[in-house]
Length: 277
Length: 236
Image (cartoon, rainbow over all chains, first blue to last red; front, side, top):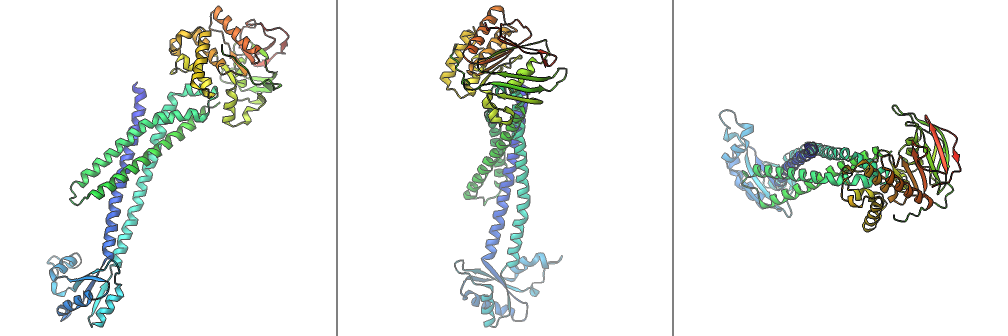
């Protein structure tokens, strides 16, 4: 009895482990991709205007903000106070004593009209026409950086999912291999009596499908619990994100079961073919 | 006994061997130079000592063994040029009694007897009825729900014969079909096989006993080689 149960249990555990791994990789990947996409979208909706540190720059700031706010395609322009600019630039400018605020540029954050956003050149032209010396940053560099991060995340994510596919195929193959060995004498007799290879292989696949389904379900639950525990601390986790995660996890579980069953049926068919005289 | 109406009457030969050989296996002599033509309704008794090659000959005919040389034709076809599905279809037209019986331990007696009919795609009510009828005829009606391992050797062999004839086969290959049976059961089983043979099935029976049953055609094997076939004696 134990000899019969051990391989079934091993296949179910293997299926559970790789399904959990696939679930965690998929959910983590989705979260990371969502974040980078949000970052990129946010960066695309705004620009930053920098007034070089110079005598009279402080006086030019309100005027520049006014010019920018009046430019078509701009929703809002807000001058950032010195302390805020110091905090933003601290990672680049701060030594052990903190930045020299007087030497920093003055920054204006510009929110673009999402329906018809202004282009970088539009803002530069408006400022130039008003005689204000400023640099307009449309965040191209940051957006490229966000896209690069997405690309870099995709490779390990695909690698992890491929590993899971291989593991699930192995789990299905293992289960079907043991089942075929257990039924070998009966299969040989059926083939001698004229049973088709398909009719011999199909019941093997069917028999292991239950074990694999249990394994995949357990793996999905493990992934769901671990993901839920990690997001409990995130107060911003919204109901919409939870629904998206559930749909993704369900799709990953269905895919995992399909992959494991393909492995099982392929192994069953090969073993039956080997038994045919 | 359900009616068996073989469908091979339009074939000149149901089974042909032409210079056929079977490979040697560990400790067992091979088989070589077998030439044989069997028509629908023929009955051939193959006899010889243990290890003479009788089971190999039946294995070649029953497509459980691939010839190492020469050719085997079954029901007008070369089975080894067919696809696996084609060979399976041919096997469904044969009934085999294996020396080791090859009963399936996790199927009941009734399920074992009905297996060829199930494989051939018969409807459940048909194969259940026919299997029950066969088992009654074989004296196994009371054991239909038992498992093969619960039967004694005599009963297991009767079940193996019942399964072999259950598929209404055109060719019956029986390897020592009554070796474990008592005289009464053996007479009954031989009568059944000969009755099916008279109805048109080609019957090839292998036995160490040359006097097991009067056969119109006899082939003696000696250390894997056939002696000239003897013909003419009427069937029982």
